[in-house]
Amino acid sequence: MLKDKDKKEKKEEVPVVDLPVAEICAHLRDREGSVGEDLRFVRYIIENEPMAVRYFMDEFSVPILRYIANNVLCMEDDSEYGKEPYVQLVGAYYLFIGEPFELSEGSKSEKPRWYKLSLYKGEGKARLYTYVFRIALRYFCRNEDDFVNKEKNAGELLENVDYEVLLGCDLVDEEMSDEEIAALRRAHKAFDLLREKDQEVLRVMVMEKTHWSKAFDLLRKYLDPLGPKKAWQSWSFEEKQAAIDQYWTPKQKQDAISLLKIRAISHLTERYNELKRKEHEKKK
Image 1 (cartoon, rainbow, N blue to C red):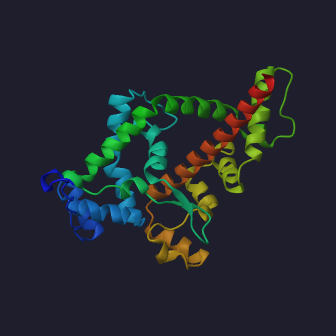
Image 2: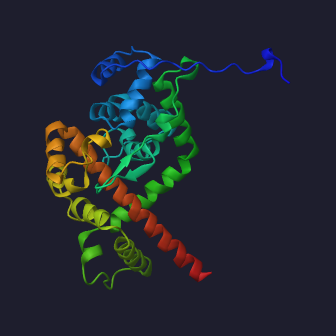
Image 3: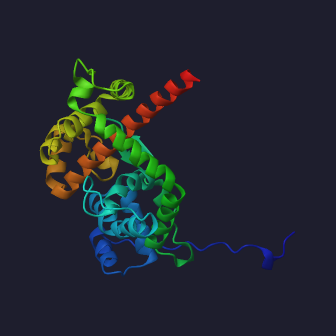
């Protein structure tokens, strides 16, 4: 039997400080607050409270992503995504930090469950920013090569994904190489394998190149209000849309549409690469 001095001391739980989300965000913005406030902030995020999620993905996370993009991955500016390189990481970061994504009852869109944030316990008096910075840095360092490959695959697809390519009747012309013809047919097949939601997002955002403000009106049916599911799961479609109009800022609407596009392209890329892999296996 172990002696008392050899036993591990039971870790003392940090008490949660119950403050309004606006006050916690103000403290974080001023680099103040406490571990207890961080724990309450995490609870707000897990509940998908609108202000908490918006602040976390914007002011809280941008400095982390900017540092990783500039100093770790040494990424270059890309006008396709924006002036700063970190913008290219936002989609991958959201999928990483927000997983798992689950389809709620009566909803047409998946909601993040923020599992990795739920693991934060404030142990050793570590602040939330330190915890998120550490796991995000580890994720992007571990997947640096995969991330670069995904960027190349997405670039290849974006060159081929166009209205004529996916919806035109005659996809092939005499000047195209065999490789280009195969890529077009593969993209068409990959598109057909997507869910209706992803197909519509790609039609609106990629093929027709619709501005986000107009795209929002066309695709908003796939969005749900943020906040605890209990608060809106019984609402009618009209009530949910009214809540989005009332509480979402233009920036939040633009971000939501951008994420729909990122996820649709990601799903298309997965199916495209799977078809390509099967083609290569048949040739062996």
